[in-house]
Length: 364
Image (tube, rainbow, N blue to C red; front, side):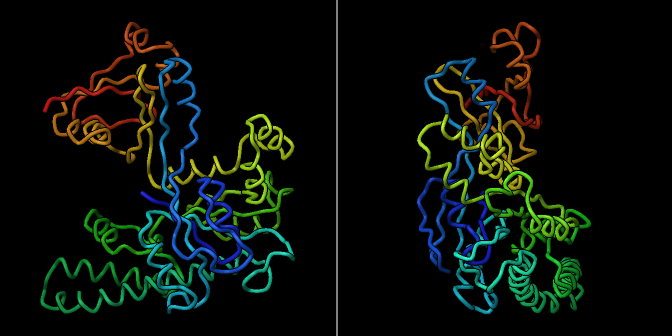
């Protein structure tokens, strides 16, 4: 599961990517400095794993991760191949969620591709290009489906009706994610279309350092614009975040953050938001050899969670032994949680909860 960072050229995408991944993607003050998408495997900050480490004292600790993709800047006409449009749109299509970076700061030394700072216009530029690409996809699909629908094929008729609803939304400059599937068939169909604007999105307002805590006039404009989108808006000073990553010690970073009025780096907030956007959650295994956070989809069953460790665990699944994170921490160890009756044995139907501490029994 990957989240792609998108936006116009020079809004801070590659600098943000560097902060998130410590992979040094080229970052320069000119458009198209990122041509091949850079992929960073980023640790998901989670204070729970620190607490488990403190209690268990394992030999090693492994955090959950999320894949972040730095995609080069889109420009007007990208849907028709302008700039490096087709390639970029293909890269976005391969991602599962979108992190849309908007420039919300004034700085005469950093060129804006359209001449001045206007995050509302910038957002609309990106949205229109993505919607036009989706419209092209929908119309091609409609051409094929209409023929089958005319013969009385019921499945084709259902698909045609859904495609027409999406087409109408796109023509009104609305993204495909505004279409709510009316049943399971439509849900499966919508996913199969692989539309770019159907992907979940969060907006990152890249602000100057002085606006990192409470935002500025541009952030107010963005929040007003996206209030009906059911999308999170995060305020981040990408320049300040870059400075923080350059500091050697944890203490230095904390002093820097305190001076800014922040309790943690904005990058940490963003990574957790991306993880949530991808509909992912964490369960833990905790032993003296290793304390580890494992990534699963929200709604995963115990055998599916076991399969993340090894496919044999899922094939030969017998049962899961589960202690909630809260109970584990309250009683201080697996043994004490068991003594208190907080140890549960669950079968194949168990839906894993975020933070469960688990042990699997299997046989192959």
